[in-house]
Image (tube, rainbow over all chains, first blue to last red; front, side):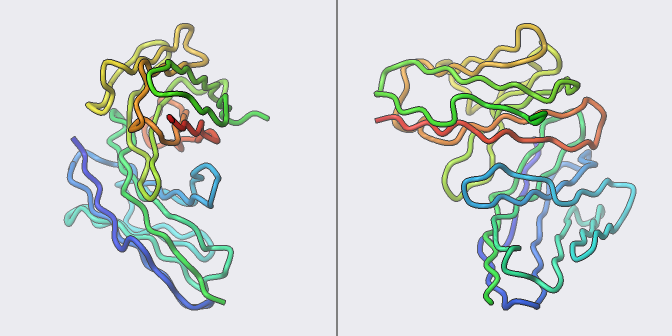
Length: 111
Length: 114
């Protein structure tokens, strides 16, 4: 089955700096890679996703890149703000299988 | 509220008791997932349904766990003879069947076994 590894487990950045979170996956059949943000005591919510037919996607300060050959994908947050502080999860699926999540990255943005 | 709804939000039970959780997915979603999340970890897959059919169960789902989605709408997750190790947040999510579509999560049910 699919296995998703996520690094780092914790990340602290100064407000205004960039943050990068990396994930690797094992199943070459996986073709959908969402990123979820979970604030303390709240449900995970999708912030951006990418499908295997594209290599990069951007939405304002958030971007995701995908390298299918290396089986890794990354989340980039630019101009970080205190409200970006949360736990971020990557996930992968082939569509015929359930989403498999990484263990999460706790991002702290220091004002 | 047209999102995924879970009840109860919190459940405290004594070890050995049975508990049942309910999930109401977004109405047009035919896929429904159950995940378990412990502190500091990502959601761990338990089982999922497409309409009323249970398609896959994780090895995490021991024989004390059972899930149903009898009419292809709401789902229940029952844990029999609860153990302290069952204490966790149980998350439900739903999505459309189409590949590569967003899974929406409910608020979760936090189970504490004492």
